[in-house]
Length: 305
Ligand code: 3PG
Image (cartoon, rainbow, N blue to C red; front, top):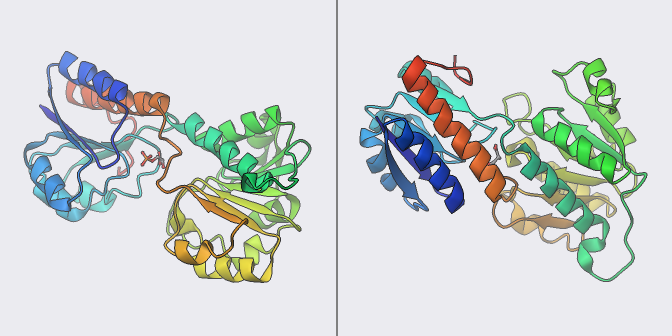
């Protein structure tokens, strides 16, 4: 079987070597399409691939149509909003993700950006500390739980809300369970977003919600830009000069956000999962899942059932 790694944002070299070892060790062939810049390169490369490993690369109906031999696509990472799961299902292609494998990397970046924000983007003026501040985690999945673990090390008072995770599970992790999303924003000094981009969550982080934050509130986004209602957040930041917004996913309206100098920061390119460890964990997990699929028909991590 031919396994194609197609990554516009490439994995660390050690991760590619690990993937090669897994794939070739199972008797399959490995092909690489790294740092591609044109969609056509992806369309050409998938033509004879039996399996595909991707990151945030878009696997659209067009890509699936071009991938005549494709049986499985694995998103090396958590969010699979870049895969047209319905189109894959219609073509009998199994779509999987590798949950949890890059969660710590994303969680660590939350604090990288948060310290930067509370210290006024290192402009030399007195900032604040994280010790004793209330941190709100929106969605208590793999990343959210790692954020909670690290926040405790900073001595933060940690809250979480997750529409799909019962309060007793959150409390068992030593975290206060907020009664609602609104309550989380009302209570906390900082809110960190870890919700996936779904029809329900897209645009859900809006003016009314973020506007509930106390004076000096900080919003951290390491999830997806689509969950933010950008026009409304811009409006709120214009009205509330105390609100800060730091993000690992550059908003479409980045130029407008940059007008809020000293209160806004975006990484130039999504960096959350961009560590050697996360690349190795997620890349090798993806290769192992593909091997298990071809060997035993295992579809444990299928997301388009
Ligand atoms: C994920 O969903 O796993 C993260 O957003 C990482 O995305 P990336 O592989 O494009 O860095």
